[in-house]
Image (cartoon, rainbow, N blue to C red):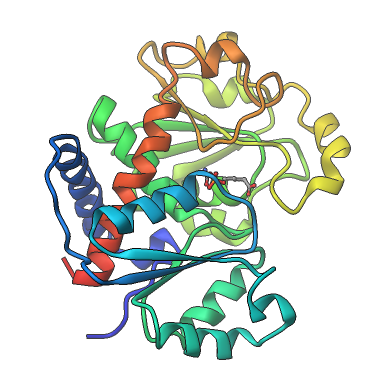
Length: 302
Ligand code: CP
Ligand code: NVA
């Protein structure tokens, strides 16, 4: 069996993604019922973090513990990766010792290069280009609250960033319509957009993108690695805050999601993120269940 990696949502078929989501829902119920399920007993996940993380680190580490395995946190500060050991060499060595490797890094080509030389599954835990693990949790959360997302309208308000790119891929894989509102100069990658065809519409007015939506999603204006652009971005994204007024343009039962961490008063108002339509806490918790399902899929083959 060849090694399966998860660098993008496009690495799985729509059917596989549906079954990962359904299994995540099952695993969540089993966990809540106190059932012990240890399909990865004695297995080890290596976790390379070149950027900060709360949810991703804790959810992967907890997932491995629940599954009877363990996880090793690897920071470039303490490993030879941070001193310039080539990706290819690190991939060969680490994959000879652990059963799967999760990477959060800057350039997407780093995870691709790592996967090329790894003999075990590699998981993209966020790059500058995409954040597919978050989308598994988001899709699970939508299904739990509202059922199938196929044919629904999702609105992305804000930066055409890694999360936006993963939403575009999700629109293809889960078959929903995606309205993107971003200021000029902050558009998503053109190739990713082109590949998604006419499911996607790009607007300059966030209110237009929010109309008749079933799910409104946003993210920070300044992603990790862009800190120096903060002031410029604050000015460019003026008016792109998700407020109660914007939510009222969406369908009555529309949900609000944000991958977190959030900045109340910047990309979202406190009344929205802490309000009734917000499902951000379920969304964050589902990182655990969705990634357990992904790990089971990649490491056991079912
Ligand atoms: N949403 C997300 O990936 O959170 P962390 O940066 O805390 O991992
Ligand atoms: N777009 C954000 C997502 C954080 C989970 C970033 O890359 O910093």
